[in-house]
Length: 211
Image 1 (tube, rainbow, N blue to C red):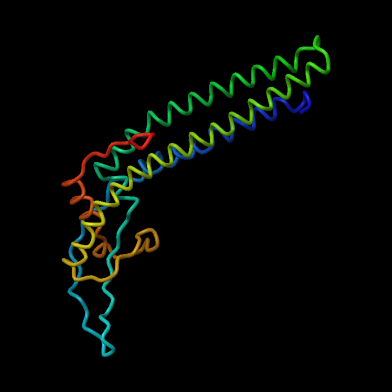
Image 2: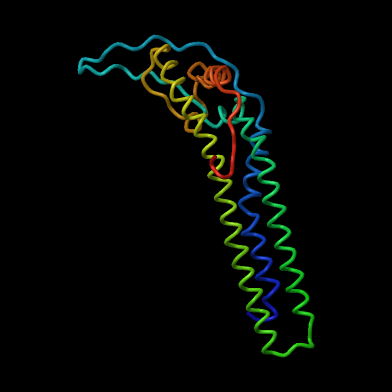
């Protein structure tokens, strides 16, 4: 790596190290600003008649899983616990990145060392850069795994709540709200799912090591 490219390479690490974390924070911020939870709607109509072929008419309901995670007590608790993990990771990677940038700048400005010594130091910086990139990827995966495990607890609870609501409403199909933005609010069971989820689960432990 030439002297000219030292700072460019180190700056590239900053994008790799912090890009995913920044997206996570941006996504959470966008979700938090999306507004209040959807208002609860009334029940749907009774099941349709069975067709001559023996199959019942489809009775649809709609569920916004992202809204459940965003507005439920347990989902908000997960976000609260994740915030310091993300911040600590960002600070750690930013500190290492800044140290690399300083070393690269010092090496670029130092004209007293020999060409051979410069090449050795450039190689050492390159190795540190690659190590930081690997560390950033490892940390990002760790955060992703942590929130996936926590959200898995919400999914387990929803797996018990949703079928009961479907049976109560006399429905037979539940569709993702994201795919039906113009769906009739009367079909949306999201508020009821959040209500029942809050009644049975208000907190989920989040850990980076899975324990």
